[in-house]
Image (tube, rainbow, N blue to C red; front, side, top):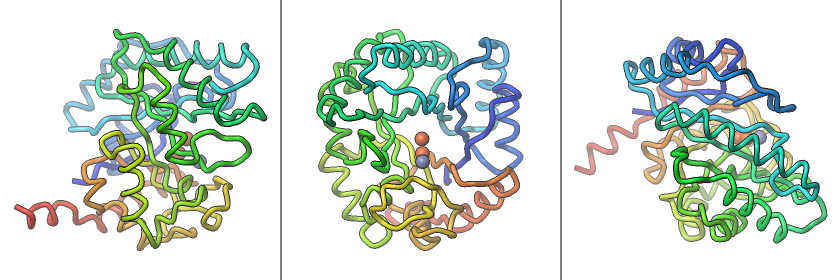
Amino acid sequence: MLHIGCHLSCANGYLAMGKQAVEIGADTFQFFTRNPRGGSVKPFDREDADALVSFMQAHAFAPILAHAPYTLNAAAADPKVRDFAFRTMREDLERLAYIPGAMLNFHPGSHVKQGPEAGVRLIAGMLDEVYTPELPTTVLLETMAGKGSEVGRSFEELRAIMDASRAGDRLGVCLDTCHVHDGGYDIVNRLDEVLEEFDRIIGLERLKAIHLNDSKNPLGSRKDRHEKIGQGSIGLAAMERIINHEALRGLPFYLETPNELDGYAAEIRLLRGAYHGDEGAEEHV
Ligand code: FE
Ligand code: FE
Ligand code: ZN
């Protein structure tokens, strides 16, 4: 079974997203916890969250993924910006505690002239403050394309954040195919080697989710412009190798491609048709 979904709008609440996911052939989804470019948030509707949890159980959903806003920068020099990051993440984690299995993905941050080492230290410090034992949600660091002063382009930087944080063993990684490709990892021609490198530096057991996106730009461009599946520089053949790769089997895949719902439904159909992981698994027995 390929666990796949796409990014959905939370405008109509939690349960509405679950229903929409099923309609387009998905068994999971991603959503923004709040306005991605601001930070404002609707009041929490516990009943709606509970309804989604029951709906997900009834439809055998894979874990869903919440995405923190882009404005969250834990590596900022300005303490006010870091405080916003702290409060936002704490509040999101308090809400997500009501959705068992949900994970929270965030962009580690941009160090803006402070240097990557300072960025790593600030991000790890924020995670230490935010993460208290009663918050069960796994937090994922997203692999970044490396535009501007983004921290987290290299596997080494993600490893360094985990090592510097006391919350380290509760953190995971979300690998974005467009980002790692734009960041210089050749997942088109050297997928095995890239995943081996990930395993050596971070550990594949830390890999909890995949953002499945094609890229508008060439390898190493450090751009971060997503393209529809099969229409960019990664291409359909590489996408098929990714969803079928042994090391990634069972992980949830989330599309963040430039699509409306019908486009997402078509991509999910295409990828489910290209998936043969289950047959492969049987052959090994
Ligand atoms: Fe992201
Ligand atoms: Fe992403
Ligand atoms: Zn992106």
